[in-house]
Image (tube, rainbow, N blue to C red; front, side, top):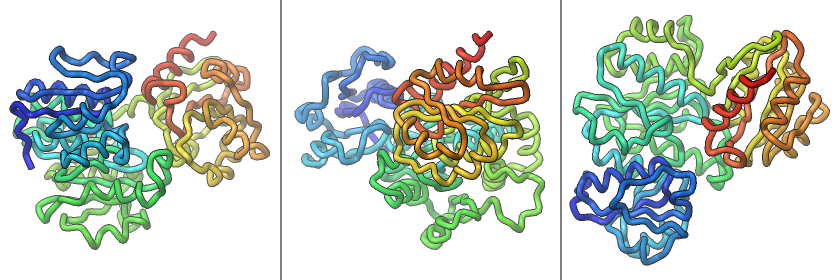
Length: 415
């Protein structure tokens, strides 16, 4: 259902990047833009003049004086503002759904517990290499809403989408929908793994026979998903595939390109030129024979596993952050083989210490800088210091990008 915003009151819940972008789009399209957030003006981008703001908490009257309510990804579906809106029969949608209803371009959407950023970056580069107009947005970088007015009909929007963004979709219908993998994550937000799984699965819900669903063949949980899909199903990471490309993110990009009519030769050109994604196994510097790796994008246990499996040097591993209710016990044997010292930080440092004590030497640090300085003291030439937090950053930073930026700044100042 397309949106006509002329003179409509649209209330956005949450004033982070996507909320501000949605409000500004409403204003530019002739609607009445409202934002409800307790933190507007405190560490947030400043919205355009003309947006009506309540900035000291949500109120029923403000929410219910709306034609549509749009949620930022951080807002729960069972929150009071959502309940107030539904009491009055006001439609509640997420920012991805909101932007989708104003978009006339083809969409490629990628979700998964790990690897989303690398995969969408590769897909966008492949499209560019093929001479197509492309916009990369969503959970990576800039919000979908911020690009709507600049899109051409011939463009392709490549979206990284999280479970938070998908759970509030209604009509969202990507031409190619990619589900990379599934593992425990966001159990601080979702009540259990089933709810998390169902939110992810919504990426396929509106696709038809003209669309493509791309799934990981080796993911057992996906076997039950396929039967209910109307889209053409394409698999990557099949055991029978004799290709020399074994990275599943690269394989997913190739399959997506195939669905879009782009040759594997173009994909391989992009892979050869690809330097990796910032904050994902990013070499910051080598100092006194010690490599310093920024893996701040590691926000799950599986992302930590990915980093550990690719390590070829003894690791001093800095990990920890805010609590996502993740269980790390399955990593014990891998940590024992790869890590010579684990330095735990943040809200879950006690949990990490309890999990890995007796497996490897475990230290705790009260501050992020202290952790890096302690890692430098523990490291000897030939070692690698890696920041791979395996959880979210919100106890100490704005987001994982801020965490990675600070890590690089501190590491580059080490003597």
